[in-house]
Amino acid sequence: MRTVKLVERGDGGVVTGSRQAEERPQPGLLHRPLRVLEALAGMQQPASLLAVATAVGLSKASAYRVLRSLQDEGYVDHAGRRGYRVGSRSIALASMIGPRPALLQRARPVLTRLAVAAQATATLHLRSGEHRVLVLGAEQNLEPQRRRVHVGERAPLTSGCSGRAILAHLPARDAAKVLASHTRGGMRAALERELEAIRIDGYAFSFSENHPQFNGIGAALLDPDDGYPLGSIAVAGPDDRLTEDALRRLATPLTSACNGFAAHLATLLGPNSPARLDALDVTIQDFVETAGDD
Figure 1 (tube, one colour):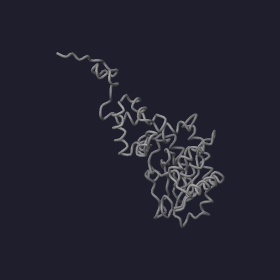
Figure 2: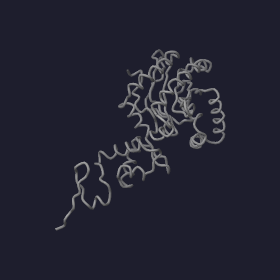
Figure 3: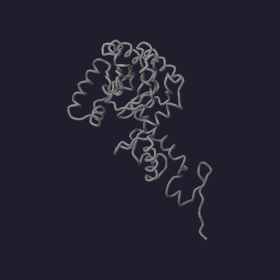
Figure 4: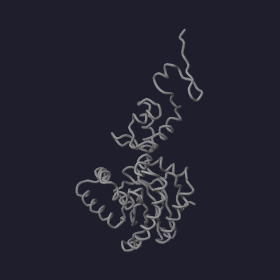
């Protein structure tokens, strides 16, 4: 008769000696995706398959199957040979279930004041790798063709005023990677000239770009200590009312609001905010729904 040695686990369960030798105790099938996602969110990103597998005690094959499943559902993004990062669907989910009242109390009034002043929509965006993600919005309901705010909406940093406001202030090496991935030929040279103008002016324009018949202006949320772009705030509305001249008149209140709120955002992230951003992939995952849904 074969004897199987049972070894007690730290949680009170048991595993066979042979299994213990092969691999650390594995979480159940339902727990694995949550464990993997939680581990990935706290790692420097993109994270390699081996790093994720080691962090949760899975074999590379098991970790790959879990990551692939999460990727198929949009909870994880695969960054090629660089590894994996938290995906936009995870960010949207986090924004719905984990609000921090103190942050909401500071952010929502900022957006509401801008929306009221412009009679338009004001939105807060944070960086997610080579994209920006909308995490909070305030909208005025006076416009029949108003733009609805969708938390979790994602677009490349090269697209729209909210993304380019962030891109313009990224370190040159990081910006070059984004441009290489999302621009081609002469388009890159033109965008590089625009980014230089954004750095000088302090804001970016968007004309019927991400949303047809809607114009916008965006400004970056810069860390007061090192100037690193933590995110952006944008104001957008119908193009027949928010003309370029009208947008320019919003530049001063917008940049002033960004300068004020950036300090609170940097405090949330703590020291070395660029590294913290990379670890989380996107920050303030706890902003909840839009002002219009209250």
